[in-house]
Length: 151
Image 1: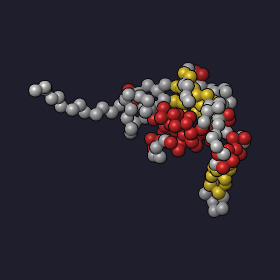
Image 2: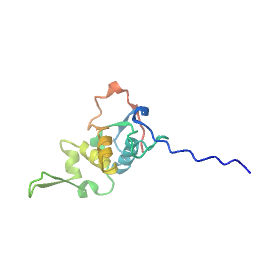
Image 3: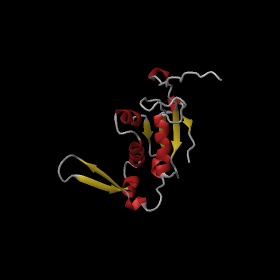
Image 4: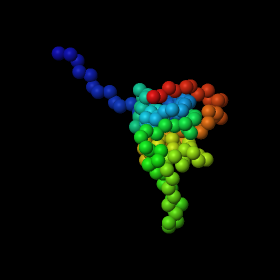
């Protein structure tokens, strides 16, 4: 009869063992939901062998060309973004087309990724590791981000 080994304890990664990497993603021509799902998984660290659900072991993601993101179907006209100031009657709504052609088109990508992260303190911490820019330039060249091909 073969020897039976006791089960190994589950190993959780410690914050000191994490070395985050920087990735740059070009959003031009990418579909919003598919791109956001892959970015959210990288932010959480689900691509890592040492994935720990309650720990931050994800990478930093820099998204460029957010103004050239693609929405499938008729979402540009039908998808609505809401924001509320806190005062009665101050609910504002804008369509995705209005947001993308406005001053801050990067908010479309930010909101899509934020909705796919955990809705707790860990999710807020992970969200701060996402950097989105509407043009092709970004100020993170010193971190030497690697190009991440998605899609």
